Amino acid sequence: MNKAAPRWRKLGKLFDPRDHKLPLGCQEFAQSPQVLINNDAVRIYFSTRSVDQDSGKFLSQVCYVDFDANFQTIQHVSNQAVLPLGELGCFDEHGIFPLNVVRVGDRVYGYTCGWSRRHAVSVETGIGLAISHDDGATFTRLGPGPVLSSSLHEPCLVGDGFVKFFAGRFHMWYIYGRPWKQFANSSEAERIYKIAHATSDDGVQWTRSAIESLIDDSIGDDECQALPTVIENDGRYHMYFCYRYASDFRTNPDRGYRLGYAYSDDLASWTRDDANVGIHRSTDPTDWDHEMMCYPHVFRFQDKLYLLYNGNAFGRHGFGLAVAE
Image 1 (spheres, rainbow, N blue to C red):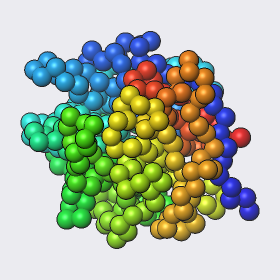
Image 2 (cartoon, rainbow, N blue to C red):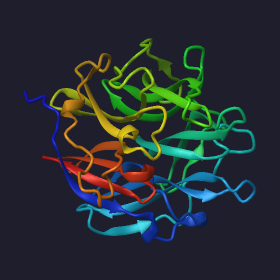
Image 3 (cartoon, helix red, strand yellow):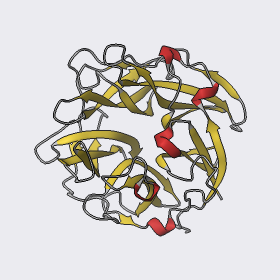
C-alpha cells in the first residue's frame, strides 16, 4: 500500500473577487475556500469582506462560487451572504471566517468561525454551527452561541474548525490561542495559536482530545498554526495547514504563511513532515503566490485529490487550485 504524501501540480489562480459583483459591497478577499460537492459540480465557499459603516472596519461575510467539473466555467456566484452576521454581543457579531461544510443526511452542516472585536486585544473567536436545508445556498444557526469556544486550557481564539466523519465519529481539527504576546516590533499584542482535535457522536456536542501539542512546532514556540484540513488516502490520514511567525509576518515574506504537512495512521498521533508537503510558494516575483501560501483545503472529486489555497496578502485577490499527481 502506497502511503506517501501526494505531490501537487499547481493549476493557477481559480477565482479573483475583483472580477465579480459580490453582495454587501464586498470587492476584495476570497479567503479560506472550502468545498461542497454537488454531483458533477463544485461549490466553493469563501469569506469576503464588507465594511462596517459605523467603524470603517472590515466584516467577514461568507459567499460561494459554483464551478463545473473541470473548474473551467463559473456557473454561479452567490448574490447574498449564506449566513447573516451574529446579533449584538454574540461571538460572530463582526465576521464569519471560515465556513467548513459537511453533508449530514439531507442537510448540510456549516461550521463557522465567528469573530468579535475586543478592546485590549483585537479579536476573540469561537466555532458555531449553522444548518442548511437548501443544499448549501443558505444556513440557519443552531443557536446564537458557539458549539466550541475558549475553555480552561484553551483560553482564547478557538476557531478554524474542519470536520470530517471518520471511523464512525465526527472529528474536528481546530485551532486555539495561547495567551496573547507583546513583541518589541509590534504596536499591538499578537496572537499565537496551535492545532487541536475534538470528537463528537452527533456533530453538536464535542469532546476535546487531551493532547497539549498535536502538531510539533518547526520555527519555535511562537509558531502560529492555522486552518487544518485532513483527508484519508490509501490508509493514511494527511493533514495540511498553514503556519507563520507570530510577529513581522504581514509584510515580511520570510515570516509569513506557508503550508505545512503532517500524517497519521490512527487519527490520534501526528508526525510533522513539512519536507513532504509537496507544494511551495512560487519563485517568480510576479506570481500571485510568491510571497504567501495560506488557508489550504484538500478534497476528493471524481477520483482526484485537489488542494485549494490562498496566496499573497491573505487571499485579498482570490484563491487557486492544485491537483495531486
